[in-house]
Image (tube, rainbow, N blue to C red; front, side, top):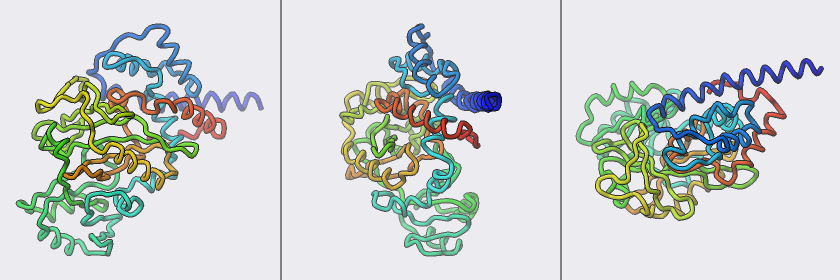
Length: 366
């Protein structure tokens, strides 16, 4: 019996290391050009003592802490990809829960109380529902869209991230609409484009600049994790890092921006379009957080949620989408601080309990 348990434990650690390397590979690919500052012996020990509670080789992620130390300050509570993706994320958001909730066509239903852009239509497995949630044929949808007088976007409702799979349709140009609809396949959402906040637009007028708000609902308590403000590049419509955008950390207590914005290549910027980040107050920050908390209570089976909110022309929070399958935290943590902040040990204890019940719980496609 002891020998059998030893074999299981060794196999679990071997598989965990393989999954951890996959998480690290994605970290390194995105952060390859970031500066690094060597850790002291004491700092390495702090990381290993904290994360060694749930991972047999926490030293695998030390490079991430070197990057954090170079761009901000060292904090052992930062979560490296080697721990986050195979252990924490799959503990907090099990596959049987997130698989259903990630479909963007459901957002207007399960999160209907959150103000959000008008959904003109959605398609799920070739079943198209119109603006009133009634079945509609593809030709009828195209006829409706050709005559719709406002700009709108078409986006994939599954298996997309980083702004990929988004098509902007202007009122002045509806050419090839049929081909565009066909290119999105069986799962998509069509939404009206909202007019963004003038206060946030000043940093980059061409993009809808949004807030990435991460929340944790664990042990009956929902709380705010790290959050950032995202600003697009000049001339770009999207505010994503992949399109030249920046992430600027937000002080979770005050709702004010931190000093530096981080680009995908590690470049620091202190302003965009002549407007300084540091100290800027996000309008209605408390209302954004209230909306995120209310939304998370509706999707409680997933403990970690990363919300994208915009502020409309009246500075009213508008829910854009929520990320549950693979909420990216690499640059978000570097800009906004450790994802779980003061609840880090609570999350570790939760994962420890998961491992006791099933040491192979993390084995799935990630």
